[in-house]
Image 1 (tube, rainbow, N blue to C red):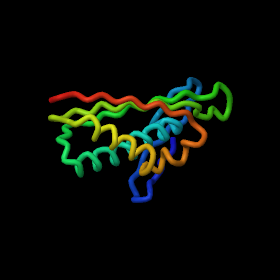
Image 2: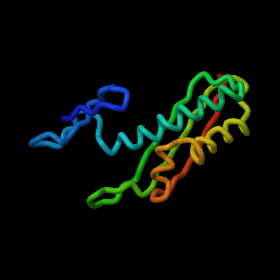
Image 3: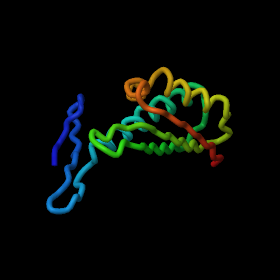
Image 4: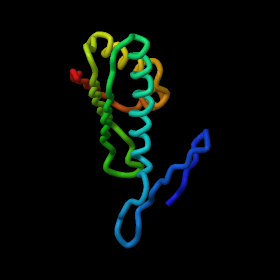
Length: 127
């Protein structure tokens, strides 16, 4: 196992395959990229929706990726699904917030977008 420390000093346990079985202890390194996408975009989307005065109660983001079958197992496709829960959410504003995050603000997506196919879906739920 490894302990990574982010730029603010926060530790994160990153796992390696155990012996003799491949058992993960800690976060899988390639999953950290997908988690980075979700977190980066989530911060953007909630901030934009807050500025738009949208009453967001909860935001859930599921990011899945398809990888090549052989080393280095590069991601070839990423699917992002947003579930936004709130009161009287305006769909055009939610769509705009997601687009701004994905196309302008999220540094993780900006870094990998040139080499990975992206598909985005979102769903609004009234609470």
